[in-house]
Length: 310
Image 1: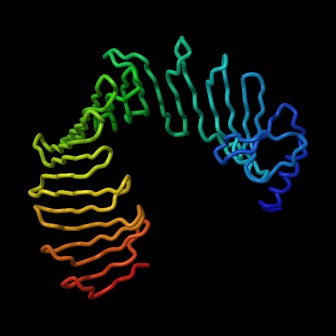
Image 2: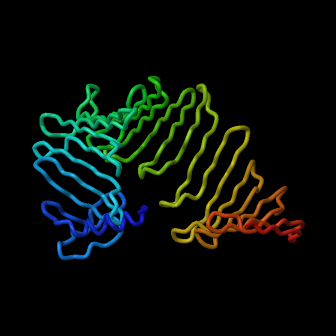
Image 3: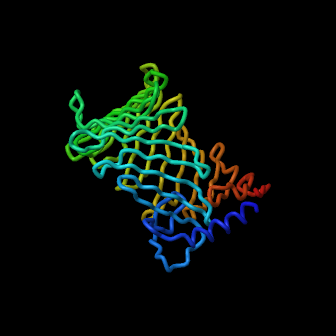
């Protein structure tokens, strides 16, 4: 009969089936129920979700134009979700998730079985080192461990790969929770970030093998970044930005005091960048929507060649 003929037949049978203990909804592709459908309504095409409850078990079947797409079985105990199984249209088990709770009913761990790999997501409300909470995500030798303060804000994160620590990040905040300092370490590389009392980034220090390699300093006018000064690798790069209300309209770049480029924004997605050599304009680049539209090559300020892109 073919897929389309089967789809029409399945849709026809689906519409004729008595509702019984099932509920039917219009749905999204992800299986999110939208509008409840009544018995007398004509079932629309597209994504349809049926929900059938039997004691503590709930079966959700997702259809596309009447053809079964996916089945999800949810199991609860005392109102708490304890497992979730997902099957393909032919009944193959795609994934299985189990949930664990503490004595007070708070979520403690999630176990995700995707066939050849078991993923674990666990939550600990109070840790031995005094932090307010910790989540652990991963399996085997690959883990991400994140600690939180009493406000639920992250204060440290450790990434472990093949049993070895790959990177770690520390955050420091003031009494109001505003970020003041961040330290990220990855092997022999370390990045230190400093923030002002408003949580704006004001300085970054990039360190390699214990030695400073690059320093960036940021200057702000309210929420608008107006200057970035970067020192390292034997040069100094300065970017200066100009704004009209909340829109960036101009940015210049200078290396060791020499003008390298000026970019003008006609709108957020349309810009004209001029590149300089020895203080003279040599190329103009027009961009729209992030794409190069035209390049103009200059000599003594005059256009000598044009290259259209696309």
